[in-house]
Image 1 (cartoon, rainbow, N blue to C red):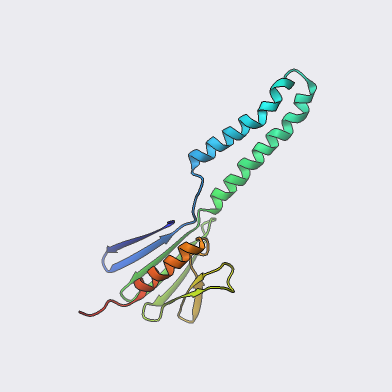
Image 2: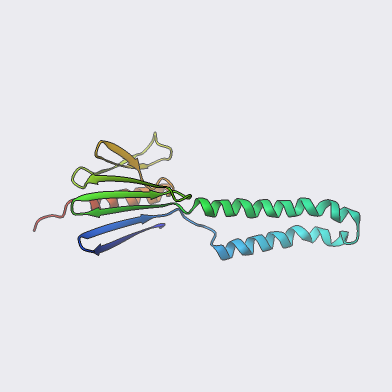
Length: 165
């Protein structure tokens, strides 16, 4: 899943959830896809070598490959988004970093922080929000529906205060 829980105590015990968009095409796959597309798109041009038709078609085929490259590269830039939810003994702190590097922060007393799932009515099904300090913020909207369902339970468990023994 495109998220990870880490626990550390420096100097206060904390749990951190880091979320990122899923990347189904790694960089190596990106290079192989562009090379394969270029190879397949130029195959029909080989019989046209030495003719004027080749020069008429070549710019359009190269433009198609360049368009694919640009679209995939744009997808990679948009996927640089990160969300970090840090839960300490007293506070819940969410930091969302968008693809351009802009940060948005939300803080709340852990006791008042609540995770809410909206099965319908949000931008996506099973939309997750954190509510507290008179403010409600989204979390993990870029995850799949199944991942949001699992994450809901995990965040709810993490926000529960430790039971006294």
